[in-house]
Image: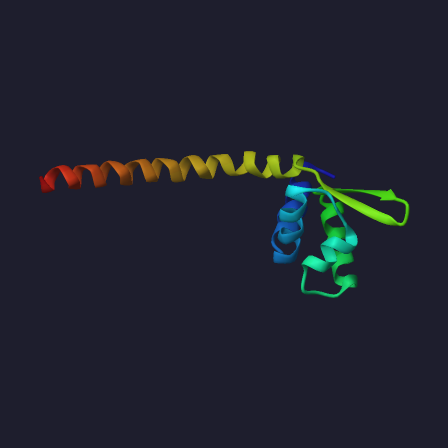
Length: 111
């Protein structure tokens, strides 16, 4: 899968609130499919579909432990999104710095 296609898959996976909830849980600790299903207000087949999307986007790993599937977060694709967003973050930081300067000037003018 090419870099652009992978980024598209990651962004598509992140677009769903249930999938973001799964990632938030996995950010803190590995979890079974059942634990993840209990945390979401949807039926288990829907949870399975969300987990498949997350696996295909490379955001989670799964391993079999007896009868249970244990899911863990793979932060690599999120780091790639963060790198991509860096240019936009710099744009906003520049604007926030300019706003800070204007606020400081306004406070000095009031004195």
